[in-house]
Image (cartoon, rainbow, N blue to C red; front, top):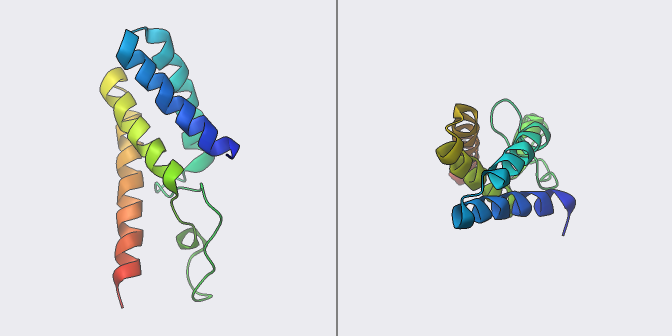
Length: 113
């Protein structure tokens, strides 16, 4: 398992611990990891960089569109939404919504002929 996936699963696990025991230190640690994940794995438009690039279909395609979200991406987005609910930090909700929009746009483009 690569380190990015491990970090994201660990972040989700910390949120689970908080929801089980209501010990705020788990949320504090998860929040720190989530901030790091946003910086490392998301661009300003919400595109996720957790998987190797897909081979470009055309040379004119923007570089960002050649990246694909992976299962860790869904873990990150879910963790951001959960943290937004617990911490009321609007940044987490905004970043999760950007990520979901980016994935939706990419999937719509893949389905177009």
